[in-house]
Length: 399
Ligand code: PLP
Picture 1: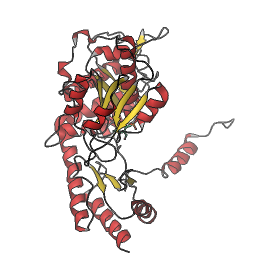
Picture 2: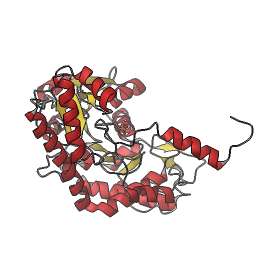
Picture 3: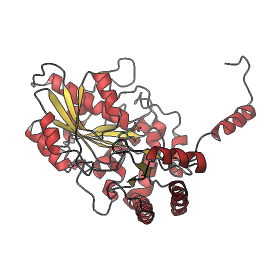
Picture 4: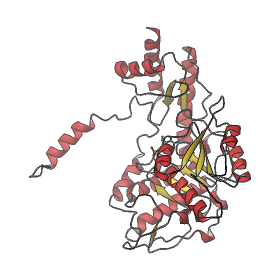
């Protein structure tokens, strides 16, 4: 650090310079995040100092958190939740039933969901001899590798079927006496596929296991599709859900959410906080952003279901256009897209990816097995972008 401070002008001239090294999402077809809605940015600014790690001091921001959780609960059909006993210490107000909290994103939500499973099993009657395990799809996000590493839990990976959904018989074959829970993905990172949640839920109920649904991406997509598949608390057996407002929810980073069917899950994450204004915390992080909470509140209230439906319709139109035009060039998707994620079969995808970036500035990514071009069509993309992208793809693959 320099001894004498720089002027605001010097700092901002440097910052603007550095910011030009960041992408502004133009030509980005690989990201599940996007530019936040402007109302989210304004709300974020307004609550910039709010710390949800100390709820008593920031009762206003905490009220917004509860309202967001209520809105998300409604979106994910959590009405069946036993609201009566869901009261948790909540700062000065102490009112209202909460069955979840706002996280920093899908990674934290997934970690906390599994931590909740482990704590509840440890406190319960089920005897685990050896290492507890969870069964997740092969397609699960790498955040579950962190779960395995952090929590001394074995993570077993079930095979996928020909459409990249988890194979139920493979899940069943991996369940043993030490299994504590299952995970299903509603909107896989690589293919945008939805696992057969109802079948997973039946397996979970039959074997008395928890079932966590990772809808970090799909949570703000599936409810707004023309024919939404069952994936949320409407499916009996689903015990927790991760959903990220900072992806298709158009909020600011960091905005994730973790919702539970039952308040006992949240209680299982309880840690006493002797020197704060509240007695307990349920979160993984201590200090938490009230700013992104206000941002999520603002954008959800402003857009409403209608606004999110339009957002999803827009992204799905781009997806359909991309697939239709790619087919004309002879490139087939690995599956008919379920949501705004396309895995395109092209010859030598790694080389094509490299060339797309080097020659034309396109950021795309690659699916692992099989290797294909992975394209995420987000609100920051346009129909014009798609046409330009396909022309560039054609140049690379025909030269
Ligand atoms: N789960 C899924 C399905 C995801 O696609 C992602 C990220 O893309 C995550 C979890 C992790 O989310 P985050 O990066 O916000 O922690």
